Image (cartoon, rainbow, N blue to C red; front, side, top):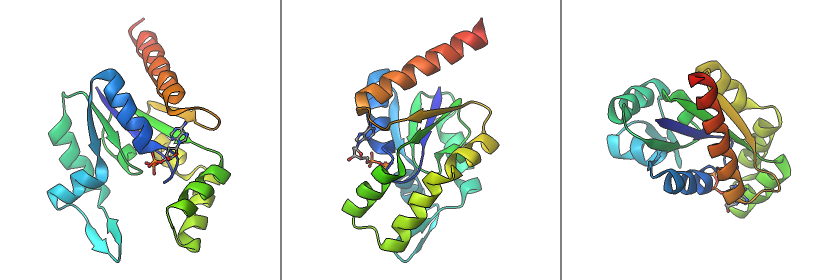
Length: 160
Ligand code: DAT
């Protein structure tokens, strides 16, 4: 099964994806590392601009039939069995991105994106199996338990 974990930068994707992959015994893959290894995307300043169609094709070819957790704010463009959209209070996003040293404009853009559900809307356009999980006030462990519970329920519903 392919699980894509997406969300606004700072929401907790990497923390949750690594823990989720450990709990399930799945491989962990970061979109950014994969793209860099495959030469997908172009460096523009200190950003990596990734062509999402090229990314989706390459990842679909590589991971079809494997058990993998894909971590990245573009992971919802990759064909997946389920897309997990992590959410957090925009104030938490602001605090975390400030700590990371994001410039003011980039910080504001991301906080606004969280406020107006940008990634959730994109994910719903790309995949019919979308789980939205609020992480606010929860530990990463609690978030992972919630995701596993939701996925199990979803599968039971489909099979039953
Ligand atoms: P991202 O990959 O979305 O940019 P990250 O995992 O690198 O995010 O950073 C998220 C930070 O927030 C990290 O310092 C751990 C912290 N954190 C606190 N509570 C969390 C939770 N419930 N889920 C995920 N991360 C959490």
